[in-house]
Amino acid sequence: MQRLQDRVAVITGAGSGIGLATARRFAEEGAKVVCVDLDEPSGAKAADEVGGLFVKADVTSEDDVVRMYQTAFDAYGSVDIAFNNAGISPPDDDSILETGLDAWRRVQEVNLTSVYLCCKHVIPYMRRQGKGSIINTASFVAVMGSATSQISYTASKGGVLAMSRELGVQFAREGIRVNALCPGPVNTPLLQELFAKDPERAQRRLVHIPVGRFAEATEIAAAVAFLASDDASFITGSEFLVDGGISGA
Ligand code: NAD
Image 1 (cartoon, rainbow, N blue to C red):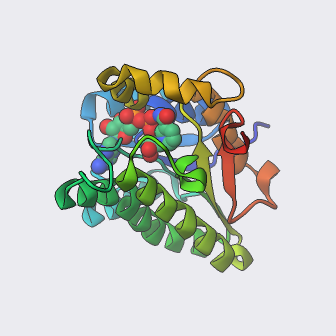
Image 2: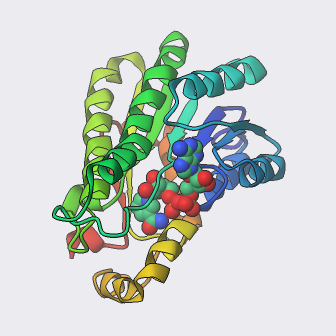
């Protein structure tokens, strides 16, 4: 019997990076995976690869979020795991003095409001089932801040962390665990895009990672699979750091 045998998992941002690696890992561990992404080709490819369902959805749209959980439930009869992971990188100059209100609002919308919508609409399914595991992707910057000027991004991830803690505490007695995943820098298209614009930034980051390298998405996926599984049955409301030691340095 595998750890996630027949659990129904909905993953947002499943077409790329951490979401894609987690879709693969969940499937390996026996889960039925619903891959959600705004980008149809990559999301559909991921679903095809893991033998799951693809739902094209924009996680900032409440109608889309309602539809993606309904689709998962209609197809498989439960929603056991929600990995609320879709997100975007900071705008080009994300210092407090330069970031405009539109850019700030966009980052909050995609990174934070989306998590609020996902939690709001998945918890009713989990309540009825009397169990569930929600993992929300925050970031190490939510815990320690960032010297590289990314105020809107850091604030959005701080919100995800606080919300996860609050919901973890609030729903603990109902068998629903809610944790904030806090990855360090991970070698994904999101990070590669950021570093392509500012190569020195990569070097500055690398210096501060005690293990001396960026994470691979598979290393983050392994932690998500653990949090999703019953092996993590006593872990809720946590900030779960998978950061190569960066927050302790
Ligand atoms: P990625 O760019 O490789 O993947 C993100 C996916 O989310 C893409 O497939 C994209 O199409 C999808 N997406 C974006 N906006 C969406 C929307 N509105 N609706 C639905 N899907 C949408 O990024 P990644 O590096 O895998 O990042 C995943 C999460 O991890 C993000 O929340 C990111 O902030 C967080 N994170 C990343 C790192 C890192 O270093 N890569 C570190 C800490 C946290």
